[in-house]
Image (cartoon, rainbow, N blue to C red):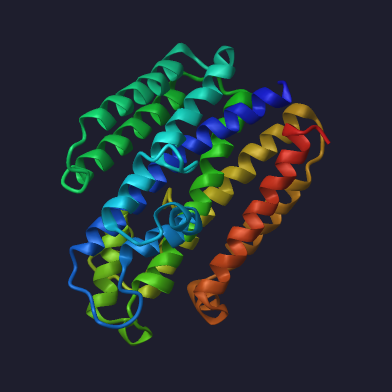
Length: 317
């Protein structure tokens, strides 16, 4: 496969996953904004959404002040924001369009129709705050449609591997960021750790990433708390949104590429070590290290592994 084709496939899947992640992040902000907040700490949950998505500076350069409606528009529809959901779907479509012979007609149609439907929604949207829950559900529905089409129609070859890698690199990054924003920003004070407020916010976050019921299946009707959340969203291999689940998928598909191309890969070696490290972790070790520091290091390390993939498969170095 040509390096350019591999890169287009990887980034098309990554943009699709990012659109889904931003929709879920907006849902976190929307749900938590419905909860009575305290007078201390990081009160503005909408500002925290900008922090999590890493585009606060871009937003402030354009809008100067924090406004709920402006933040929602910036993340959903603003064409000047490279990471808006509109631009994510547009970029996913453009990447797929450039390699249409590498995907099935069904995959192209799913991405293309999502792009055109979203443009129609932009024109029809009158009250962005009122319609936010419906827009979020539409984005999640379209992303699931595209994912399902990829899984059910694509040939399981190297192109498929790059599509799946794009999905799980983005998901790993997002899961780490959303856990971090909950623990480091949304919680008003460390005094609330373990309180009813803390546990309720964790449950809202689980609902926003479609993992609430899965958590209940894994832990029964036990109370949601910090330790169980660490175990579930970081270390549980049965949770499709956990960090270790994404690591395992990346390790598997990089292994397939190593065999397919019959070439060694630094990225494969690094992800294998990361997977082994995570298999030996537990919630107590992570808590002792500090959740915020642990997640910061993870985001850095997963990006370094991506850089190795970029050099080998996209740049051909």
